Length: 182
Image (cartoon, rainbow, N blue to C red; front, side):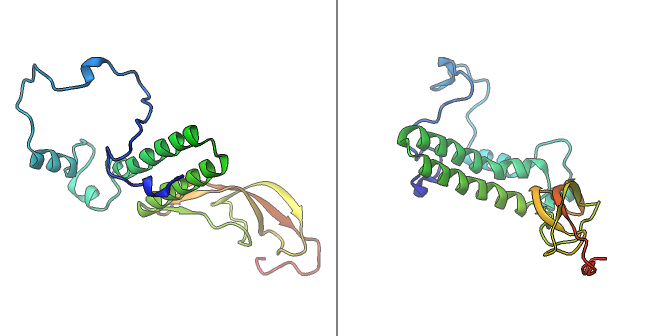
C-alpha cells in the first residue's frame, strides 16, 4: 500500500470508500428546507472540541479518558482501514495488503495506549492468577517452574484494571532447581 495515503486529510483520496449503508439521493447536495442558518466554521470547530455527551463532566474530560475522546481518536484508524481495503481490492497484491493492515493495527494499538491501554507482561514472567489464565502446561527445563512459557492470547489492562487476562502456557519443571519465582 502506498503509505503516503495513510493519514491524508479527508477528501484527498481519489477513490470513494464503499459505504456501509445505502445512501439516498437526498443525502447529496445542499438542503433546501433548512430550519436554521448554516453554521460558521468557528461554531463547527467549537462543537467538535466541546464534549457533548451527558456522562462527561469537566474532571473526567480533562484526563483524556472520556469515551468520546477515544472514539474521536480512533476515526483516523477507521479511515486507514478503509484505505487498506480499497488498496487490497484494487492492487490484488496480498503482501501489500497485509503490510497496510499491519500499519493500521499498529496505529490502532498506539492510539489505545495513548489512552491508557497496556499489555500484560507475558513470557518469562511468573504466572499470576490476577493477570493470567493457564490454558496449558509445558515441560520446560529452560524456564523456571511456574513461569509463563508462551502467550496464547494477549491480555490487556486499563490503568490498574485488567480488561482481559492473558491466556498462557505455564512451565512445569521437575528439576531440583525450582526456579527464581518460588
